[in-house]
Length: 438
Image 1 (cartoon, rainbow, N blue to C red):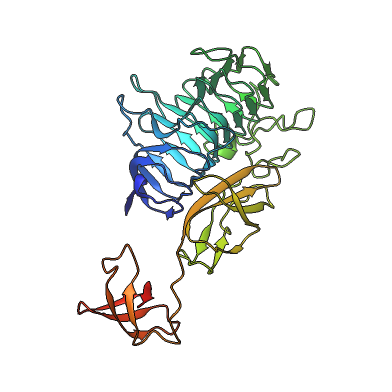
Image 2: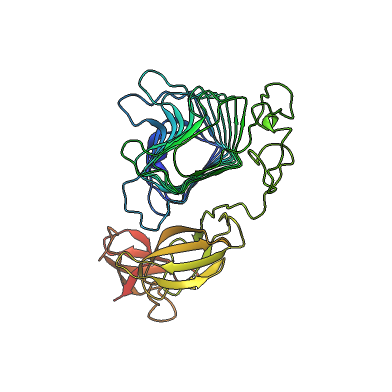
């Protein structure tokens, strides 16, 4: 079965399907172990909370010189303020095809983790970076394997800042392993670069960017290839590992085969190279920052005034838990009205109308993720004029029904008297809940 990405509704989980190309704006979507075909344009927004968990895109040539450059184009033109998108891509295979694997532009908040990028080759005038980041902040590229590409990661255009490239394995690139400019406060740590062609570089300026300053580069291992080309900033080259040996002999064909035999640790006890390599990698002090991903459902889906609603966030990824769950009603007209804290939450609305329920999840590191759903609360059906509706004359009071305003007599009623079987004066039977006595 195939599903167009633009047809997926907010809050839905799609598992094991073929996802065809198009544009997505829906929030709170999870795409698990899916195969992607065509060009996928993600128009990001605050608290979008898209999760791509597993899955693959293989030899897809939908990108042309006339289209966006990314097989996945994750873009936005909103004013982010302090908000983040909450988009997470993990355990994904991006293999070959035309264009960039992922091109990211104008984004704030993205995690690409534990993915594999391979065989992205530059053809003619078309870019073929595995990941290209432009004008984006708080983009974390962590724990991925880049191999046999033209370029692993580029951050060279426009206003990037506060991004991170860490714990990645980069091998056998035809071009740059990692190349950036104009990225203040960049963090590049614990990467293993093997068999480099060009090496990696951090430049001061490219395309009119600000200087690359305040960056931290440390604990990276270059093996059998070129090393860093630095401009200004606080880069630290680290040891010369050109002649270092792998624990597996020769040229390893698996990710863990690139674990270094020696050296293992820096003088301060930190690991040289990626901490994701090997069956028993050394874990550095302190927690690994795992971002929460908020998600929730509610029942009943169409509540009445005075009817208890249960909000359940049990499928939330709490990141570095335990987490705090805070619920509120944030109407479009403005303001925020607290509903309560904890998970699950039970709440009874006392007024009808559309409620914009927002869940904010905060983990122990202070990282925040939000999810939202609209809840339409209806006026409760009126009580019967006596102990029963049966035999009473009523009028249909439901403005969206074609029978609104018609009159009839109640023939029977459900046990709770909420559903009535009515013989309309027009000569047909009709089941209704929304009536008034005459």
